[in-house]
Amino acid sequence: MEQRRHWWNGRWGRLARRDVFLRVDADRWHVEQRAGGAEGVSRFYEYDSVEEAEETVRALLAGTDGWRELSPRPPGAWTPTPDGPA
Image: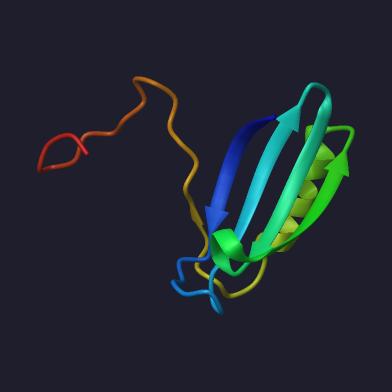
């Protein structure tokens, strides 16, 4: 299974942290909604298409949390900062 994208609500601590993951395994797409960090509780969704999975991701990210994408950038895609490479 390959992780394609990861979002975090920007909050620290077991009670406040939320994560959403988008993964693919062959031709099946998986969304994981996790509450409570690495040791937290997860809910899983499985789809036949990326469009269906992305629709669920959009619904999960809706609201007032300040969601941030933590997905890795592809090789060579870094963006320089005024202080130099990140």
